[in-house]
Image (cartoon, rainbow, N blue to C red; front, top):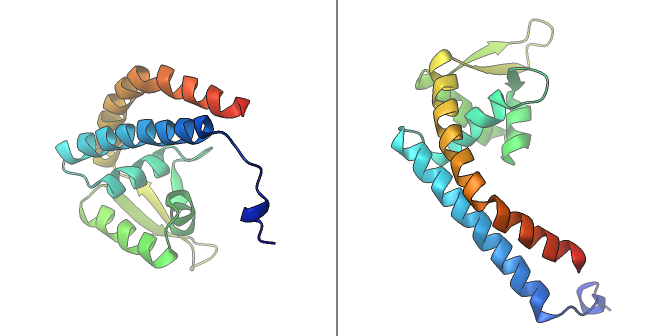
Length: 142
């Protein structure tokens, strides 16, 4: 018997909570995308800037780490990194220890843009946060 066929039956309320949670997340993503576009960034460029600037413990990432953080294929991350460099939002540096490793670091302009979009996004999270928390609590009970 297929794994899905043996799945425990859940109430419609669980599906409603999952759908509501996804809808609330999508609303946040839409606001974030709009905030990025207002400053001349694509949503993916903003996500990349945030991934670099928000990486734990350091202010640069390898292109492979960027791919992982954005859930991209490595060649897509290479192209995205090149576009960020081309826009003057990041710099690339090849590792002196391993020439295959390329690091991406934000320029002052890149940091400024990520700060500005992020500030607007935090305003939206403060607004949407209570709803998201309530929905998560509903989902965790089930």
